[in-house]
Length: 214
Ligand SMILES: CNc1ncnc2c1ncn2[C@@H]1O[C@H](/C=C/CNC(=O)c2cc(-c3ccc(F)cc3)cc(O)c2O)[C@@H](O)[C@H]1O
Ligand SMILES: [Mg+2]
Image (cartoon, rainbow, N blue to C red):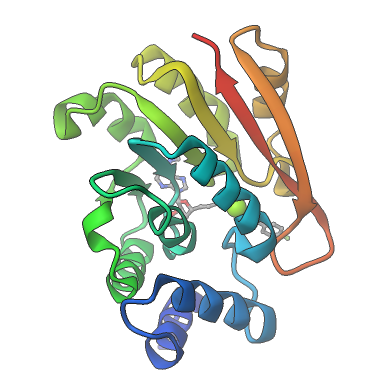
């Protein structure tokens, strides 16, 4: 049977990227998605905004919702200080399998913990599974209608502390209207929109950065 798009993306990385070099893995994926097949990675333009927020926060604990092929996982992990871990959640086993190989190829496997499962099931287990008290940084890039329920779940599980940063992809395209309304109107968040473009296109999209105020 025909390979899947994530498998073709992985093949491009194994063929063209330098093993152990995260930047070359990132550049290879961006080139593939721009010139061969579009894929829903955060991409280079929004990726630069992601990089700047990760560097600013310099998180000790970080969570990513929706690994997909691991592009943003590698982008985030390559900037984390030594001794910190990025936990990334992915419930599609085929995508998780591709992501594991891309993460391994980048050489960042020691900074990343990819957990297979649904965010709704795993978020309440973060304390018991990883001894995590709170997350300094959360990147939301999974199903768009799950951003709001999972944010409320993070609050309920007391996994956010005063100053925790939520960074959400695709708040314009495909759009996350209920999430945006919540973080922009809730007194418990200070929210800011970073205007950009949908990965590898000229369509408007952007990232929403929201600080939990406790
Ligand atoms: C609900 N709980 C969950 N727990 C764990 N993993 C979950 C998950 N939901 C989804 N996932 C996984 O996250 C990933 C889903 C991402 C959804 N993303 C999008 O739909 C998306 C879509 C677009 C897009 C934009 C324009 C367009 F024309 C077509 C697509 C652009 C993006 O940047 C996107 O992020 C998959 O790997 C999926 O298996
Ligand atoms: Mg996205």
